[in-house]
Length: 306
Length: 252
Image (cartoon, rainbow over all chains, first blue to last red; front, side, top):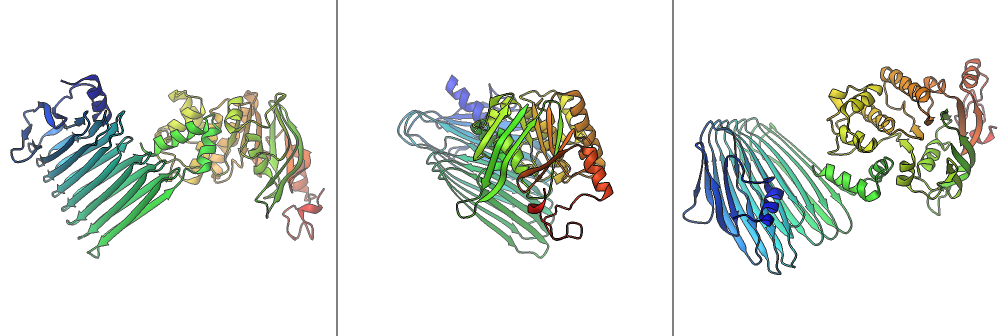
């Protein structure tokens, strides 16, 4: 079912060399092609629209769910709605991600809406990687929307990575935190050529003592454009911190719009944003260790986006 | 052997041209330890940067083991065995101490070697090896890691720009022992920009650089004795009690 190219895409977006262990659902060119469930994790195809329901039983520990999407044909628009029920007290890793190989000159697009219900005391790490390639002039577009509700004491770690190849992306993340819920978001984005990326993250801290930390790092190269909007809303006694760093190169444009909104006197919210080129003393330092200028630049970017 | 022949350097744009180094001539011999000292703004760091290739001299020549390296860039000089420890090292988000030491040593990542390098600058390897070289490090910690990256390289010429700056007294003792060890056991030509007595005492020769010129080359004991005897002119460049109405221009 999976050819060498599919496997390459899977490796890029999900770190998979072969079929994963645990639950998985692999979707290729708009259709589910492989699925595995475990005694604790069930995957059910939605009846009313394209997509799946992933049901994780309460107390499920140390299990993973891989739900990669690959598109390898040109002119295809794939839209999915996935819903995740992460049972109380469970501890799971969910790896999504989309890889597009567009061989032709027509647009290939993947739009995914992922909705998570992280129940009381559950812990979820969600990794979403986007990657695209292709020989033709067809655009590669990915528009993910992530909605997460974290109940009391839940912990969510969200890792969103887009590295190379995606021509256009509109990324939206909306997260609501209840009492004592904790959120850590790390975003890594690299755009090149004439690509553009638009990323919006909104976190509503509704519960007492909820905390949110967002670390966004991006690199914009050549003529690419990036726009970031972050909004932390503190509706209760809570702590939130956004740290947003971009390296700008060549003729790229980056704009970062911070918003912190406190609706409670004990809400502590911090936003830090910085955009700048690679510092020349960083390049000089690495060159003085024997690296060429190009190697030094690559080392700095690789570390920054790690 | 590193030869500096008639090197001059000006910095700044056309409207505001400042002569930083004026006809510097000096030969740094193998296996010797030199300390360059002198007042702020005298040209010490600029000379170090000219040696590393960070600044291009407008006049003069630089030779390493008789090879003219004047037109060599930073990378080429680094690969010939020249190293420079920054006075204010840059920080790198996402790059760990381990990675920096690996790059410095040319790709080797022997845990024992890294541990030794960090130990020699007074840092516990276990605590630091997987730390990122970012804002989470204090100035003194960063500086010691910077020095470790130079020690990792097995250099022909190692230039240290004010290694004592930002380092606490307790760690500095360990560091001066490390310089001593490098001096005694390796062929590296060591050039240290410093004002620290403990470092000055390690020197085979002390170069006094002020106003872009070499004012004096002497041995460490003499300078120390002069300072102790209070017979040395002040070179602070201002009207102070010791150097009344003198400024650096007048000296020498």
